[in-house]
Image (cartoon, rainbow, N blue to C red; front, side, top):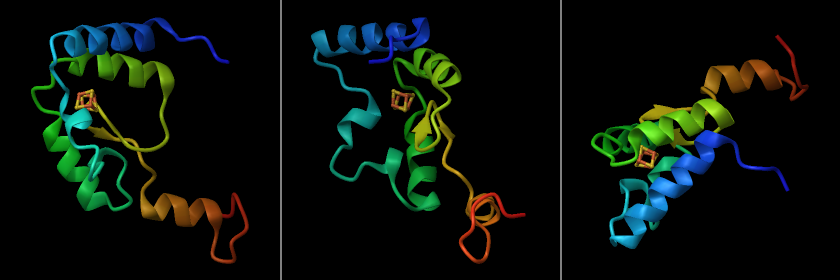
Amino acid sequence: MKAQGPAELALAVALAELAADRIKVPCAEDLATDLWFADTPAERAEAVTECDGCAVFAECAAAAAELWPRFGVWAAVDRSPRPKAVAARVGPRGDRNAD
Ligand code: SF4
């Protein structure tokens, strides 16, 4: 199991403190639709706007900088690959790393 980095740990602590006060961050309130990890860019764009004003925004941004997530919205940044980038990486015949 990979050890948590300092930013990831700080985010976990901040989220636990909010949970102790029964406060949910926007991405935890929307688990039914899960816009933050939706398949479509339009839905993830909606999640980007929902991050605004989040109580742990700074901690989330620091954790994302530490973790380099490859999918989903973290601190109002959609880190999912763009369709063109995916197409270029996979290639027209499905072979990887094609340009
Ligand atoms: S800033 Fe991070 S923790 Fe807050 S709603 Fe956005 S993704 Fe969730």
